[in-house]
Image 1 (cartoon, rainbow, N blue to C red):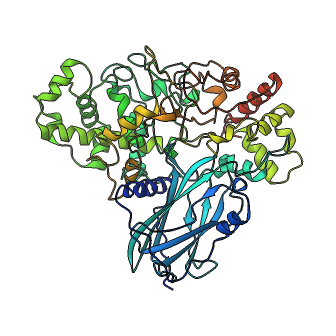
Image 2 (image 1 turned 90 degrees about the horizontal axis):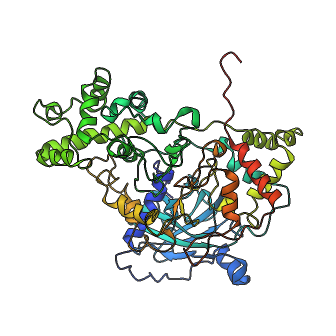
Image 3 (image 1 turned 180 degrees about the vertical axis):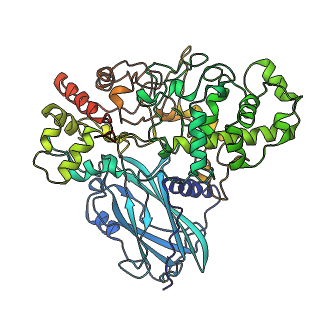
Length: 572
């Protein structure tokens, strides 16, 4: 058998892109399934499903032809029942249409939760080498971090050609039962520790994402109020280092008052979607939005570009990364302020610019976003007391219990108990966020505070000229399939009023809370989850969370252990 060449592009981003691309392919009529010469051997999952009541196992698709009919693929989990919140392995048996083991050159693995707009919390990978049987390939690192409908997708390249297949996995109560009272599973704890955080996934849309020169220039621009066109507002105005890159206000205050709360940027390099409603699909596209916002930095597109290219320090650094700027950007007769957003004068000046000049400004503006993103990708939370506790538990240190108080450990047990709190549905992984969008009853469906969250964000990202598929993206062919996943109808239902699950790292010091800063304290947030919003007023996905006053206090006590501890100084 030919040696399998595993794609190196299997970051979290690539995984979701692949899955969404397969969803896009499904718009075309699927070929009739091939008729193999002999019935395919039953998988472990299908045998178990036949032998057990349907309610005992999640509903899984395990055997189907690829979309083009070139291959047939059978999958099964090596761990049954399929676990939640724990990495495990799957086996994919790939055969030709007539049932013979297929020669395969390359496999890409992807997937995610289409309804929530996010991929796997970890990066699935195909292990190089033979699987347990002919045509078998082991997929390691599969992790489902919440109940619901998932997709596991494979793109297969071999002598027969390139083809794709996507399996639906409906996981319901797959973890099976409650955890022991007062105790958290060690494997689960390890998955929540900061040491489990991998490097930020590659950004194919930004060729300078990891260039040290771009990081340095981005850091300088992040702290430079000159980008606001004389308003004296820098990125650090709202993203304050002393507040874990938040500002302590209910809604951001810049040149005006924004509509939403300032989220932390710590760990933002791992995000698939940006902003509370996911209206940007790259960190650099998001970095551009505040520059032109009348409520944030109040500048214009042309003013920001001219400031950077004409700056005595920024200009040469910018040219070293992106080449000499177009002369039209600094032409003496060009307006000082011009852009598609802003006041009427700035918009009129933009409309008078020749299309070639507009394109040059857009390109340079995108490059500003890319260096800001390069810096922001380096921003990470520091280890917290919780991480020390996990490390001690994993090491078998008998003194581990002393790292957290009795109430804090009780709060951790509640946090990780899927039957009592359901916190892990949204807040899991080392950043304690699944990166998805959830309706927790905080959307505003009536004026004057009308905010539909993700349902509007989906529409916004699709029309954003700076998205992955736009002219200023560095992404190659096939890298933007996540946009295809955002099909008609995804803006309705539970995503109407849904917002991104924020990281819980440093949560005790990053209030007020929710997208509009409506809750001043963690106690108020927990009370919101204990007292469900009326179902008649708005659809939401909150389950019952019956906690006593003491248990609520214990849960808050645990959340306070997630604050980053001071880093040791060089003299320590």
